[in-house]
Length: 53
Image (tube, rainbow, N blue to C red; front, side):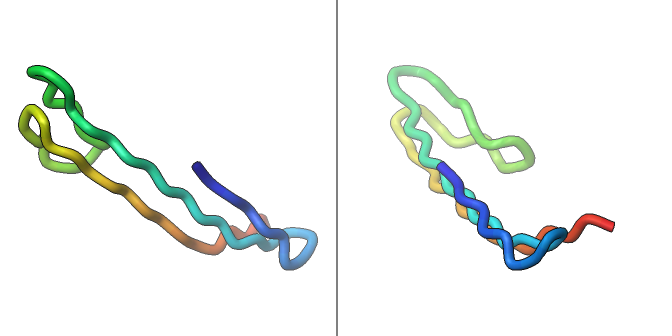
């Protein structure tokens, strides 16, 4: 899930969020994070500013 909000022609704020739960024997994780075990869950949230030159 995510949202962008333009504050000028070339600058914007952004926010992203995600949720993941491993079912069964799955050990999936978000890229760049340590793998989690079966039945565990992760929440990922990010916010930032983007400016295009």
